[in-house]
Structure formats: C-alpha cells, structure tokens
Image 1 (spheres, rainbow, N blue to C red):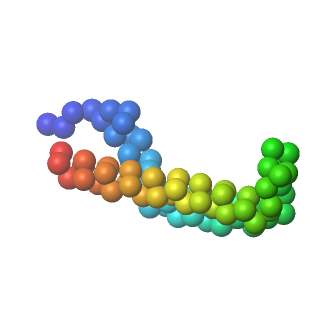
Image 2: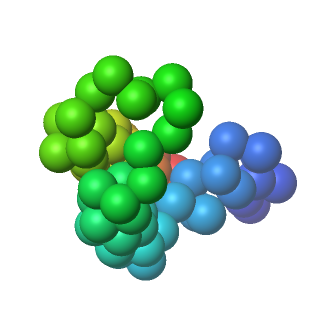
Length: 79
C-alpha cells in the first residue's frame, strides 16, 4: 500500500518538462526585454552585458528545474 505523497513529492510532480520549456521561452523573452529596458541599478552596465547576465541567470534556473525533474523521476522509480 502506498503512503500519502508529501509536499516535496507534490513539488517534484509540479516541476515537469513543460515547466522547463516555459522557463527557456521566458529566458529568451527576458533576453530581448533586457536589451531594451535597463533598470536603475544596472545603468552603469551596458545593455548587452545586462541582457547576457539575465539570460545566464534564467538558463541556470531552467537547468535547475531540469535537474529537479530528473531527480524526481529517479525518486518515483524507487517507490
């Protein structure tokens, strides 16, 4: 008999391939948005460096979601 799923298991279910896809699309949109709009605290940074910074940050977030997805698959295969 299976035990009730925990909050962590529910979170792993939420992180899926679709979430990763949305994160990657958002990172591309963020790249174009950040080349046009430079926030106040980044005024000393050139727009292209600002865009690269945000793109790298969003891609790292996407990779983290991808890693969580595979960890959750491994976890549920053990159950």
